[in-house]
Length: 64
Image (cartoon, one colour):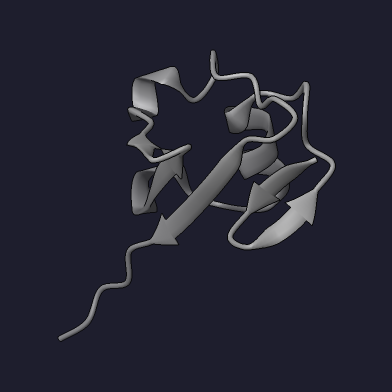
């Protein structure tokens, strides 16, 4: 299992890009931390999620 934003998700073996697309995240409006390290957007397609990974996905919200 992969813990994403505090919830256990069966996402191991998938790429970060695939997971984010399935969940409807817009890559230009988020930041992702994996195991305490920020994942550069250029690495989303290559980052394969592993059992035990802990991710935080933070969305940016504009306002005025």
